[in-house]
Length: 104
Image (cartoon, rainbow, N blue to C red; front, side, top):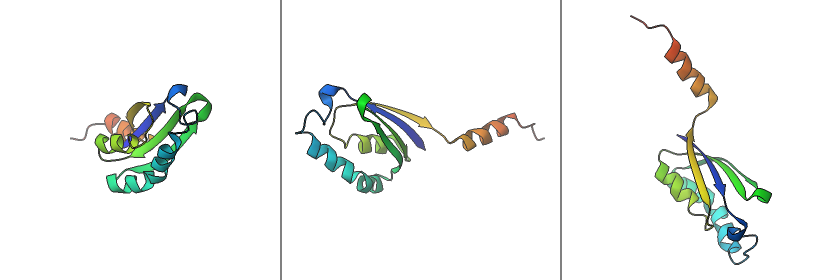
């Protein structure tokens, strides 16, 4: 299952402005690959828009709990919005199957 994640934080919670937070945040980022293997979470992308304090992530996992553990490993207070999504080709296949004439 795919999960699109939007994570936002305020300037007050940004590791750039609180340098004492940065070592833990960097360590968490460096450990994401190993944690993903442990939790069976595949990272498709992880992008940041630093000026807006927002990140966009696409993860693949069997369970929401694994996604939550993966994201909460980052020691920074953030608002996290997780939305299950699917690739367009899967949506198209479902739509075609739903509109196909009934087979008797």
